Image (cartoon, rainbow, N blue to C red; front, side):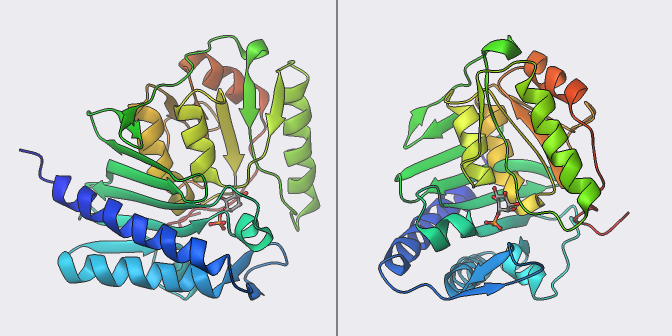
Length: 277
Ligand code: LIP
């Protein structure tokens, strides 16, 4: 008997609804606001989608907790507890959404005792529904997916994301990390613009690794479940254990590739989602 299967099925249904809202919104004018910086964007659709997902799940599972990107932006706490917790990014790839760049996803991770039990990532313009339940494999539109299994970093395609950093030391570290990876050498670096999609691309073998310093638990939770169930590895950028609240990760198709990246990149401070320093 799978205690969380009902939750997962409900999450998939809500994610489909959310994807439809996002696709409909792309047909209309998009009004954009800035959050913490000129490149941290939010739209009415991010907020409406999150409201829809959280209110529907709360009605069905009233004792569960939530960490949602837009709720946290509005002041809700983002501490992870042992209870069943839905970690939600209503639009992962808001900048892509604003520009109608086609990697836009809805991401849900579900934790119990701080362990991720399932992940759902709906890349809604590609119409790809990625799902994974702990110990039961990863799927795209119902078909099993696996990582490339690539062990040789010099034959790998790496994903990361780059954005404006107010602190020039952080900006230089981000650029230096890219230079360090490119000069291994690797086949290339790509930046699709949605962390959750990036992890799914590694999960299905279209890329060999993804690393990022400065993202959030709602960007990582769904994709981390999918990647690990597809045979991949998530670790901290220092090579230690993955920490969902640490705002950083390496997600790779093999332990070897993850370790090679950990050796090459320099960490820089980005805080924590649970506000511990
Ligand atoms: C975004 C990520 C994107 C990353 C940004 C941001 P949002 O999530 O998925 O890949 O570069 O730092 O976290 O804000 O669109 O949900």
